Image (cartoon, rainbow, N blue to C red; front, side):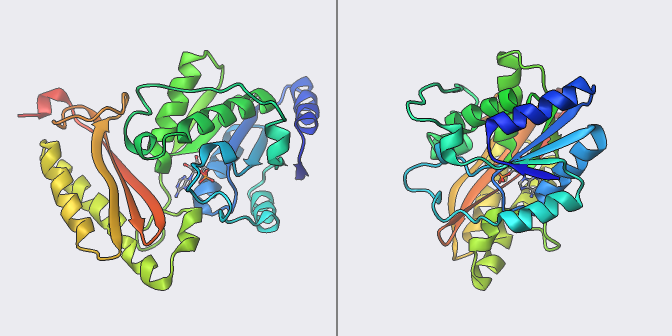
Length: 287
Ligand code: AMP
């Protein structure tokens, strides 16, 4: 496995692979890797001849008051992890390599980014779409792998690829959790031991909502209300949002009568964590 830092180096490797007829899988990440990222790399390893992992804390997707400077970084540990999973190349550029002086082209998206994290983090998805587009142009993968943990991001990327006719298959991978249910996240490292315990309220409320829907509840407000109460029972938790949206359009819906995404964002102390569940309801199952 090799670590490269420039676009030219990636292009050179990709050119050779293409000449040999090799397929390429890309796993875009911000590093500080854990088993959630690992599941994406493993999936990419299964389906492609070559696997590229990008590790780039993308300044463009962070708002001015967010945690860009403190975001955890550990390239040495990350590269050992990628190597152990059989990745072929890590692309680890500096911000200046991705955004040269005078950079002024962006990929933006409407509708799908109006709700959920797009509402709380106004510049986030413009940053995500721009950097992912750039990575797609640099690596030219056959397939790219994203986690369902960031469900809105996955929907946005799928939509972008479709809108802009990018010839790349987008593969969504299930949420990987800690043994006690907390969704794995690089940001979990911010939590104090007391906050780590409190953070369990996210997965607990997700399980509660999921059970209600499984048991036939079709009124979105009732599910949201129960989940909200559960989260509010934890004194260290502060809700950013608890919402149920159409899984394709990301628009809020009052009735659970289709493929839906129930997504939450909750501050535990000053750490913002997210979680979600999907449900697919046939229209005839509603009353
Ligand atoms: P990040 O480094 O947080 O930008 O995440 C890089 C990719 O890993 C994204 O596609 C995430 O959705 C995915 N990911 C992060 N955490 C998890 C998790 N717990 N389970 C599955 N995928 C994850």
